[in-house]
Image (tube, rainbow, N blue to C red; front, side, top):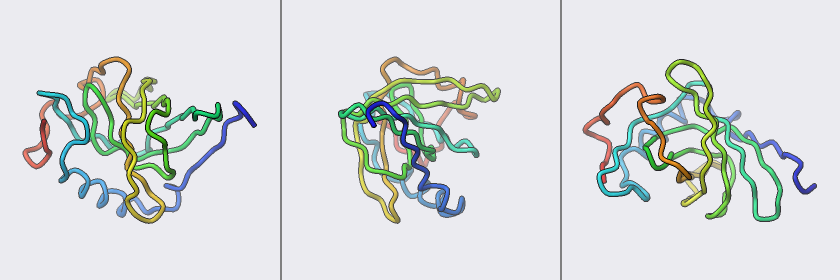
Length: 146
């Protein structure tokens, strides 16, 4: 099955209200790997975010994830499966104008949350222009900054 995509959509079974509540709780925690001076903004497109992961065995896994925070260096997501640190990822990010931009990166963090859900952080291979995607230029005071 090498190279054949496997589709995972554990989030489809989770109510949006539950995901928003979980994302809000995650937003109150410390940044995972934020660099000095990096700003994080809330980022939760209503349709979810498509993520394609390439595992160390060569398998491709496609899934929908729920965005929580976005920065120039990384994105924090709620995802329906465990991901090994070092896994290659391509994240399809909806822009403010409704376009889709694919951004490549690497999983740098994966932690079990609850109800078969995991928090993953994907660090971008190249810096991202956050104003193209997020609706606010400054993070709310409640969001941690590095």
